[in-house]
Every structure is written in structure tokens, then in C-alpha cells.
Length: 425
Image (cartoon, rainbow, N blue to C red; front, top):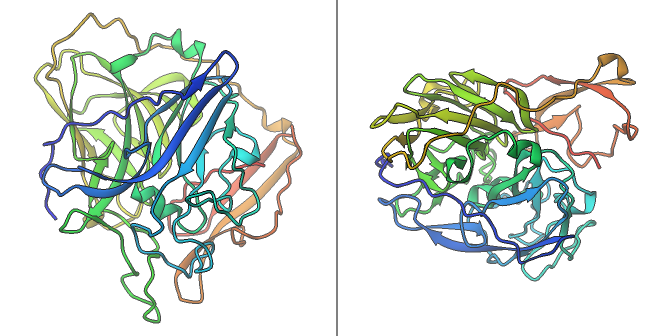
């Protein structure tokens, strides 16, 4: 399918307003629903899933230390938008087709509120798993300022639910960040980037089976799926009008498999000020930035003295990364148009120093662990990923002592680059 680039303006996800707030607690209600949304002006409206009636979901902004409660409610249909593979662990025919559980990716939370994959629930809160809590999830946000995101986490269908649209930003702010005088307000823009493919009628395409079907089994498990179209904030190849001044962008790779290596065709520097864990000690000026799936970056781009310029965000990351085929590269992401007049003097800065970054001594580690990332084939001949030779539902083998310091070596024995993060409970 051929769609025109830079014909639709970038949407900015709204900041979610709390349902109730006092000096001690903040309470949100978030609904998951099926909607029809225009993803490109040359496409029919596309059926997607969204939080609070939009894809991507609204941005949730909190303050470090703020006690937040969120009631996540599943009001989705009983039939899935996309093909279900019932041979996948957690997605057998004895569980409902549509089920969800929300994970705030990167957050420090108690185990009951972490979005455990088996803690899924359906419309009406029906659930058979071990950890589901019908009450609101609690987030104490005892973290420094950082860029997180929330997404679905249901066992066996996470890839489908996120692809259908269940994703959004979760930003933690603090006083130290505010004092840095970074670009803020309308000059701070979140960018959630995903690859998708479409059918001719504008509906989402997702493969029903691998390129070489095994045993003629109809499945939706392809080892890696790469869409041929890039969406930013739910729009295909959008443009955004900016003033000739500094802007802060929160970047999120919310794609299932695709890595990105972003560059500006103006060849100017991108100033990275933060990573998944928050602000860095010092900003760095870079010409390109690589993001793996689920990875975030906090950057500043300076459009000063670029009035009238159109600047395209390019991508040249192979798919699969780093040794994929050139034909799988989608080389265009979005366009910045320096078309707005300067509304006021730009007093924001790119500080030479951001925040102190605590360093840990290797000598303080009490233990080293060596874990491998492996792959083998299942009984259908399909690739499955293993951690240290074990499946996801294997018994717990690693038990770090609370408060201890350890060094973990992750040894990738597969042919693919493999992002990974750990959840300690």
C-alpha cells in the first residue's frame, strides 16, 4: 500500500486529568475500548483499541513520590481484532480471547500492581489467574524524573494488544528537573513510534502464519513481524509545525520487533538528556540514536535560525537488527516544519550538567550471575526464546538478597539483538 507522507499533522496525546485528587492521593479511571480512528487521511477509519477512547492513550503525568491509584477497566469486545494463535503458552482455547492487564514499563511498584502477565482480566473483571486484584492499582512513584510508558501485558497476546493500540506515556517529574529550565509546556512533545501494515480497507494487518507454514497450522506467530508503515502518535508519517527554538521530545519505540536508528536529514545534532531511567549526568550531542523495542530516550532538538526549513526524521536501522535485509528498512519517520513564528524569546537551555548520577563500585558486588539468551524450536518448528535455557513459566532460579549488589552478565547466544529488562518481585 502506498500512502502519501507528511499530509497529516502530528496529534499530541492529551494529559489525563485525575478523577479525584487530594493532598494525599491521586485517583484515575482508565477505560479500554474499541474505537475507529483516522490514522491517515487517505485511509478509511481504522478499528483500533485505545485507553480512554484514543490510540495512543493519554499521557499520565505524576510527581515523584505522589501516591497514585488507577482503576484500569476492560470494556473491549469479546472477539479480538487480530488473529489469535491458540498454540502459544497462555493463549490456549480454554481462556477468553480478549483479556488485558496493564504494566507501567519501568516503574517501581509492589507486585500486586505490576501488571503480572497472568493477572489478566476480561470485560466484567472475570479472571482465573493467581494475582488479579479487582481494586485500583497503586503506584507510589518513588523514582526520580523519568520517561515510562504503560501498555498491555496479557500472557500470550501482549504483541497483539499493543499492536492494536494499547500503549501510552507515563511521565514522572520532580523538582530537580523543573529547576533545569528545559523546554516545557507546548515545547515538550511525546513521540510514540510504531510500525504497522494495513489491508486495502484500512484495517490493521497482522500475519496469520509464518512465511513457511509448519504442518499447515494457521498461527499468528511469526518470529518477527515488521510493518511497512511508520506511525507517530497514531498518525502515518505525520508533520509537526514548530517554532525556531528548542524543543524537548520524549521518544518511545513501541514497535513489536523493529529497532530504529534515528537521524535528522539536516545533519544537525540531537542532544540526548535522558534514557529509560531518567536524566543523564551530562547531555551529549549525537548525530543518531538507536532505540530497541520498549526503549525510551529524552532529547532536545534546537530549531533556532532554521525558519522555513523542513527537517525529516530518518531511520536506517535494518530489520531484523543489526543484520537484516535492506528491503525491510522503512527510512522515513516524520517531518518537522519550522513554520511557526517565534511566540516569545526562548529562555530554555541545554544545561552543561543535569543531575548527579550515583556510581557503584564493582567491588561492592557480592555475587556474579551469568545468564544466557537462547533460542530453540517448538514442536511446530517455530523459534522460541529462552532465558538461561528456561521457558517463561519455569520455576524461579535467581533469588537476589534484598539490598545486595550483584553483577549480572547477559550472554546473547542468538543471531538477533535482544532488548531485555528485569522485573524483580
